[in-house]
Image (cartoon, helix red, strand yellow):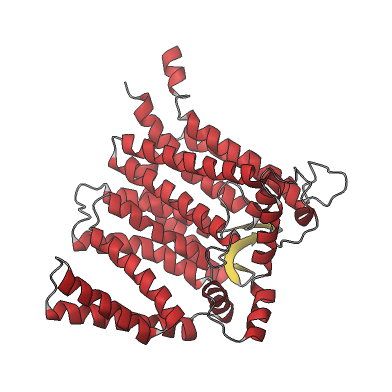
Length: 425
């Protein structure tokens, strides 16, 4: 009887502890970024730090429910979960609430919920289910197309809601597919597309085409890579089409604020006056964030002692720019600690994913790691000015109920799946 009881408590506690550390440290920084500077009532539920306590409490309840279900439930009902999630995204076009230009929330009184956060988990389950099917071979074009469709449907629905940040996250599933046998060609092509796009925006389509042509000819005549004339012409032609296409997309499809953010990142604007105006409008958050981080030095100013944080210089500091609070008040040591915690969590998930005896669990585990990594990479890169400003939260750390609950569900489903491996005897 004791053995049967202990079986239900055999989870990977290293992962759970890392999760709790990130959530707890995140709450401390939300408290610092959102308190008014007067005497603090920790249970003031009108303030972000008070609301986050409720979100954390509800997350703990969610964990109990997730771990209580049989692990097979998530595999058996993954398709239904995916369909329901897609319907929730479609429903936003009819009943969604517009916040900051994005129609991504359902509003129930003063309470809002963002279904796109949960759609990532649903997509991860659907991909794991499809790839682990005995009739699926990801190396065949037919199954590749079907898998791409599973990914593209939520990505397009989220993009149509003007939520670019969440859309980008779906690209991370290609790393999962690569682990399961997707030809390396797709990964190489993806890198090349990004490279050509950036060069085309920075230097123009004609110069980009010339550069690609030179690289191709170098490969053709000076290396062992043998390309026929037709292959050479095809590569140069596709590169030219992509270069001109990306410029058309940038100038004619993207909205003005999206153009300005890319322009600031790549320093495309030549007019000094317009550039200064763009910086005041679109780079204000970033500039203040960089100032806050740099002012923290090596050890930081101290908890609740950050002048830029307490002075509310950084907008959205308790959400997308929460890492700037860490940088100012906890310094390089605190920032490095957060990065280390995330790296340890990601490495732990990947390690557990490789230990799985079920392909479904392995694919899902890699999906969990990929989603968390993409959020982590984009958010910190954005706050430090390394990539364009994209509204995306830091997992388990930023303020918000939908984000915290979605990552809780995403991670603890995998912990439950992993418990099957631990509990086998």
